[in-house]
Image 1: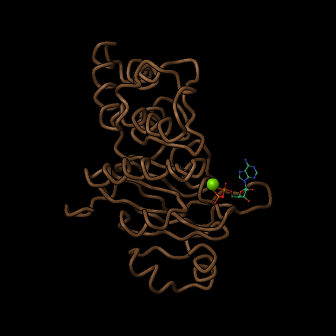
Image 2: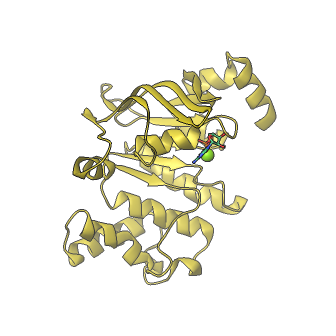
Length: 248
Ligand code: ADP
Ligand code: MG
């Protein structure tokens, strides 16, 4: 939870995108302040993943602007790579390098992108593995870990770049129920430490306890953007009422 004055870190203004005839992002305006945790929820196909991917320019947009810490996200080039490194992303499917050890997974990009020495990168990597409770697994390969452990490695890997913000796209959806808590606990710890986070999730307990705001999307639009206690107690839109009645 943030107590510092509100400083915009991620800003989307008038963002539009189509896939063919499908208007997947429709006039999206969204501001995420430094230290805020914004949980994005909504029915399947509403554009949540596309929104996350647009913030990192893994998807192009057709109109509107996206700025990260005041810098407009360029369409391509070196400036894009630099800004992209400011925003880490954690996916449903972990996406670890299968043929690299856990430690290598959390050090490679530090050396390649951040230009750190191997020793420096390994020291940082080990401290991050400590933080997610996995330092004793540093020399294993991803396949030797559980899904929950792999996802915690993916979070450590994202943190290793010292991003200004982290995007999570359904980070626990591929996990067995008993592993969901260990990942959410790591995310709660990051939130408590002031990390700026955008989290697409179906975990309403996490939304209630960790989010500063809940953004509800339907059909490519942001339909509601409110404090979680207000949203869950009194959803305004029929779409949100309908959605909540199905999942709660
Ligand atoms: P969500 O994450 O909310 O489930 P997505 O952002 O993945 O929604 O998708 C929104 C809509 O865009 C869906 O109807 C999906 O089928 C469509 N879509 C997503 N990616 C593509 C793509 N690469 N090409 C065409 N349609 C896509
Ligand atoms: Mg999705």
